[in-house]
Amino acid sequence: MAKSATAARAEARELMQRRLETQWIAPPVRSAGASGGPGIVEVAQHLLALQAQDFGQAVWALGLRSPGSTRADVAAALDSAQVVRSWPMRGTLHFSTPDDLRWMLSLTATKTVTGVAARHRQLDLDDSVFARAGRIAEAELRGGGSFTREEFFALLEADGISTTAQRGVHIIWWLAHDGLLCWGPTRGTQQALVLLDEWAPPTRDPHPDRDQSLAEFVLRYVTGHGPATLKDFCWWSKTTVTDAQRGLALVRDRLVETEIDGVSYWMRDPAGAPPSPPRKSSAVHALPGFDEYLLGYQDRSHALPAEFAGRIVPGNNGMFLPMIVSRGTIVGTWRRNVGAKKAQVTAEPFTALSGAETSGFAREVARYGRFLGLPASLVEPA
Image (cartoon, rainbow, N blue to C red; front, top):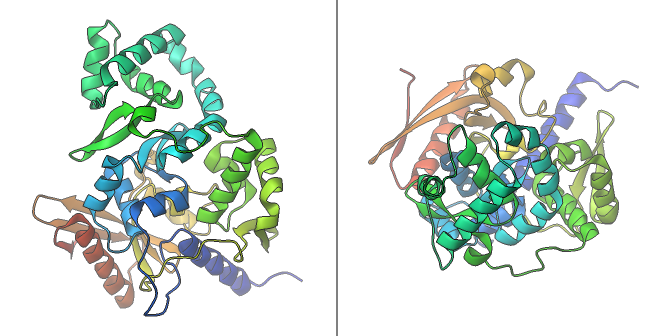
């Protein structure tokens, strides 16, 4: 018997609510005596990796999942080497813990670097150039050094290595995939480059058994992102289907399978899953651009109506705007203007927000302001 449209919509709403809870965006409300919410490091560990090419937005992605936290708390986690920013998968910047970064790179780096070999040939970048750049980095950064991107580029240029035409960016990218560099301590609103192993010495085997890593990859992804499909995981991690299936087989006894519209979704078995942290309930959320709630999955149709997809990435330029989420559905975007003394936010809903949604979003804007340490207000579009 065919499922009714009403039943299908109800299943989709349930799916998105569970993802809000799993991602610690809207965990279930606990009793008044429940303990406080998670810290920034706990958030990074729980999500495993949070997309972070836009530093300012990624900082909020960590903070919104740690109620009561501030931008200074995120900086403290970065400055203490408990969270780093690098390219653990897809050639894309993410926040993660240092140890998680290492074992993810052990699975993904070779495939990722091979995938851009043609571009490196176009830029006249080869193993000899990367080796020279690596020696410069080790010599100059050893002993607690740190450099901004521009400072590191100047070092390379002084040694005769051109950084023009994106060569410098690709050199940093390659050295990070080799496990030599990462983005560590904060420098104003950005970060500085450091030697990964010196900045954050490993506390576990950086090269674990491959099966062990595959199992952890699948389990940790589902723990922080489920319900999710195997295709979602393959897209997110860029592992092969064979490796993904192997990882799933190794942890299947710790997961629960559910079917929606004939598609299998995986969740962490509640009996073995870490508890969701307590927080106040909210039906509306102010998520940053590039947030895992949208980009953590190949299929985004349940969260984002197809007719509005172009509003999230205007001009299809690869820049994802901050999102207004109401009861699990993305219903608009928002823009921020953060100054030295105040922050102003403009809502750009796809359709008119209800009174309750407008009030809920205003509360989230105020919470964003508290995170920044600035008064924040919702203003009308110009």
